[in-house]
Image (spheres, rainbow, N blue to C red):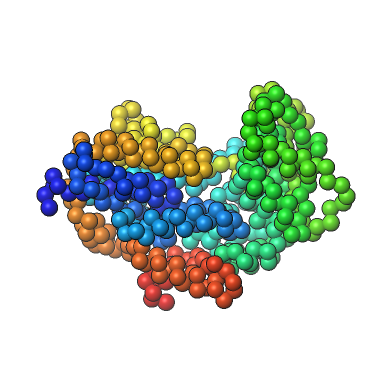
Length: 461
């Protein structure tokens, strides 16, 4: 096969939904006008298992969302996209090395770090990032097996679905999570939790909350957990009323919250989940030796355009732990231009841009590392389509890889001692996790140690 009559070789780095959708779209593309004979795609993943945040960022009691994996499995199971896991970009392979083996590289590494919250006391040991907590309860292999759950009263900062997930998992009784794929160590940790009250704080009003209606309604059905919403936290400005009128989702969220404010009678549950609006966190209060003893918030008011301003009215809340669910942030990738302010790869519509603004030939991005941590699965698909469209438009002019043979990258990685896993290895691990769940009527029980994941993938345990 001559170089002028070979497949376009593309490396996609990151095997979450964004990377898999980009690979799927690219695999079906017509390359007639590019000078290449079809396309060969290698999908790289740092962890031993694929699926990214669908596996490690969705609460275990949301199996409906995790069903996205079924569709992703169908793409990878076809065989026209080669999965190479347990390969860490920047450590096991560099951008320069990928460019030696591929005509184009697409980054889809997502956003996995917590965004910062610049308030005093936020570095206290009992002040946690939501992303870290989510990774713990989802069994991410890079996180410790234990989580400190000594607090009886907890604050969660944020007004999105991640804040709801964190609050719900903290408030929910561990036994009610047993039918899910919750790892054994997480169950034991939550079983021993001392939590009684979870307070969620949003700096804006109910109509500005980013909860999805279904996730919000779920809170009202958690056994032995009462949801409490203070009517004094309700305020609507012109922008709020406009948002309610224009969005059925906003209307449903506001209705659910309003119904909770009208509930009568004392709380009878052993645990309570409080939703507070128009409270902006201003300080994590600490003891003399630096541990969390409370949270100070400032009452805010809507300004007419759905934004808020402080009122000078401060409240102190007696909490022993704080969870920050204020957003995700992308991670710098070695050798790839990065926008430190936005937390994304510097790009224009998926074409990566050098610091001077010129396009970096043959390098692209998609998903949250391209646009930031916003949007649902539908956005991820359209996002991937845009990036692939530009890649195909550039294909004919790309500098061709020096070593495009598909076997060469495997020889290179294994020569460096990298234990590369493939789709067939994942199928072995998948079958093992499902077998762990079967005796207990569960879909699966996750293997949470990287070493054990590799061993079970190889069938050597």
